[in-house]
Length: 288
Image (cartoon, rainbow, N blue to C red; front, side, top):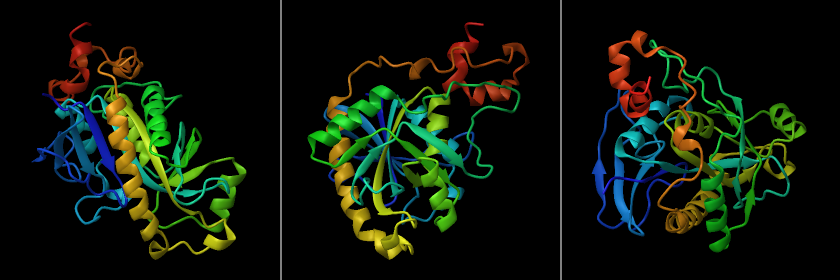
């Protein structure tokens, strides 16, 4: 049975507990090595693959993550849907620590991160107006409600460079813009998942108010560790419930995101690029 569902664990969620028949799968990709081995197992009769975003022992900074390798590795395993969990700071009073937000928009404040599989002789431009899969996000929301999490659906995730936390001026600016949560990792994953025609949604787990809040104006790692652990337990319960709800077939448009995106004529695409990107583009080149 091929792997169908991917799980990316962020800060605090370094593994999925009690996975039956688990095995580690080490992959390399045309873009280098992923953050670590994929832990493949069976949950609710579905083959799933878990990847710790920051590697064993949380050794990789957000800016050092090989986002392309991580997502491409899931594609090689056959994954069609990715649930991503990550720690975030809240930019609104109503999003309290230990709440969960399922954002439907992103704002990019990163600096030069590579977030496309294309280039090297092939150009493609996918639609990204709606950057997460609405069907998968609905499943995540329903699962969160079912397990009793305090969950908010919709909102904008500011993806900042880090690794430093925000300045007070930055935090107040994002609030003035109407942003909802802030983190350091999810935007590149969402872009690459769309290019790979993989459904993607984010479980944004609030650990703290960002520094705009008078009680959180000096955000430290120590402040958020306890919330990270509790959030990780909540995320595991939500993901287990969400996997149970995932239908066999996809009805969204994520699986055909490249259908009208590739602009380069097939005959001028370098053969090496065709081979490397075959898991993503082969079905379209064969039709042209």
